[in-house]
Length: 381
Image (cartoon, rainbow, N blue to C red; front, side):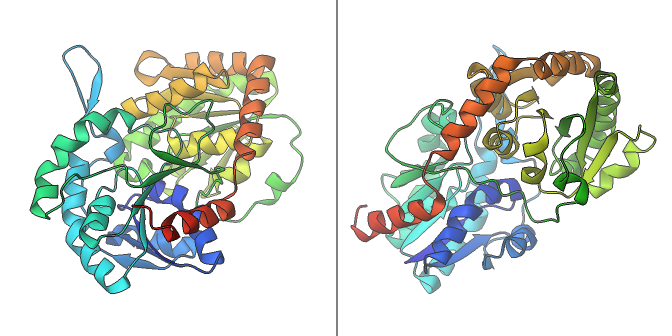
């Protein structure tokens, strides 16, 4: 089976697809990842083959592709998603005609995937990152992509494809429709060595701060300044017998000098190596970060600023495995107070452990690869 993976050039969109893509290759299938030039280094580091389709497009992350209404709520705008589909589609179709895929696997914002599949006459399978934060966009997709679908002669465009690979435990998933293929979430946060200190049992409780390493490339130096303020606000936790671990991009290290020795800066270490030894994770609530901590059974304090982050954080908080705060409504000192409360919450630890067990009971990517092979081979469209 030939599998063409479509993803636009943002590593956090690509990483959740790596475990299944690798499992498909291990099962003997041909896999090719198609994206814009900026993603090629991340594809190379994943060990998967890649091909360029379309140019890079400057602009904000599609995660923030929403607009506030007069009532203060948010709705999907989808303009960036449409733009990404426009710039990738010709190249993806041309690549598809050469590669001759049996199926196109794509992440939720890469609508070029199902559009190209419709043009090529092959099935498309969507792969979620975790919680289906794009479910709210469902009602807006037909109108947003009507013009592009018509331009390529695609009638009855189905953005959700033939089926959806779902790596999220059912108890926190926001909904399900169509054919859902359950999969265990296997964290992939890029590659990197495990330092010696992570291989040793912790001497004190640990709190990890993961404030969006990927975001630092877009909003520096503002990102580094906010990370410095948050870290400084969390220093009272040291008096409670806690060590702080702060994951940082290399560009942010200079902003975090002069901190106590029990604040450890972790540069370019995969988060999945850090969270298992932590008693709490403080993050912005991005799906990859949230799901990585969930698998390790780590309670979470999610300080959100984006509409889609809020959806994921609400689901986790309602499940009792953490708390959600709005960044604009709390100070770093208040974040520290919530963190201290969560460190002493047996109920939160228990629920986080239950979610981890539920996640790990789902089928591994190897089983999903076999299920996909059966589904595609059966001729279902």
